[in-house]
Image 1 (cartoon, helix red, strand yellow):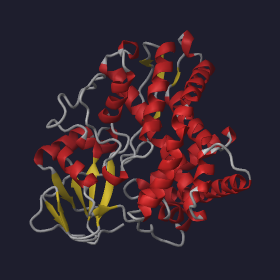
Image 2 (cartoon, rainbow, N blue to C red; image 1 turned 45 degrees about the vertical axis):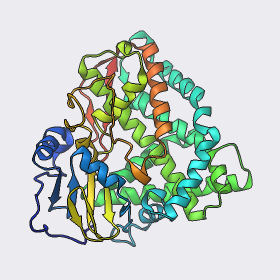
Image 3 (tube, rainbow, N blue to C red; image 1 turned 135 degrees about the vertical axis):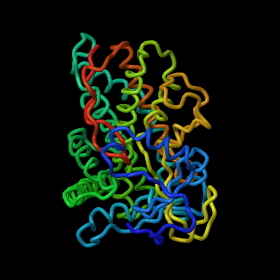
Length: 397
């Protein structure tokens, strides 16, 4: 997606980051620290985008109302229409007043007590998953595939009223769609995203029609009552199903690896609330979140013309030594912890309370069964930068 500005402004500090490099995927933090030490904001020539690296700059970008999420259809538009259609009507890709209307509808549904109602269910699902892998008797298992992945998918499916039988498809479709957010997706990634978008939308459309005929005690029924259009309903439910588990899976996996490598035991951590916040900060599941200037604006010391893009590098911001003491250490009881993992401003993650609840409860159940889990092998990376995570985290008791 080319920017309105494709050549370096003169003069401009220029970033040396290679956003598509294997080294950055493997461990982005040394390169991010080097760039952040040189400059808080830099021009990135290959992407035609400004990069906000410091905590102050990233926070300013996220909170500036004259910067927005302005969706541009991916090209070729005809071939990618199923993917574009879902995003064109998503709350996350809208600005006020449309964003306000859609967010109010979703927030109203969340505020009806759905999250708190699910707390006992999260504990029940977590316990059942650990029973299946024999976690209490020292068995080795994949903490990600056997625990961190299925739990939030089951929870978000239940929240919107979908049957558990849909869960494997939801996870597969979600992973195919989010790979499009990485720099320069391949034709194979694009084709998979189109198939996933088509199948995902079809499933949700059928579900919405069932709830239209027979409303239930779920979030989809609440959204139907809020008066969203058919396209908005489908796009919103897909967004909730995607975002409602994708971040939780990666935060759990990234954070668990950070904790296990820190030398601290899960059983030693008395308060899982601060632990969850450190898991969110230490190895950010979302590394980059982009904004577009809606008008000429100066932000973080940079003048942007309408149409220019600037990205907040959240992983860099969350390791900024100007804000965090010992930023490269995993500190389970860190306080204060003003991380930007959930964003800020009008696009602050609406699902943050659900994610926090799931993480606290699932850690509590795990600690009760396995107070001293340890890595049983080297974690396997998903091989992505923007949405950073692991494909496998082998552990034993």
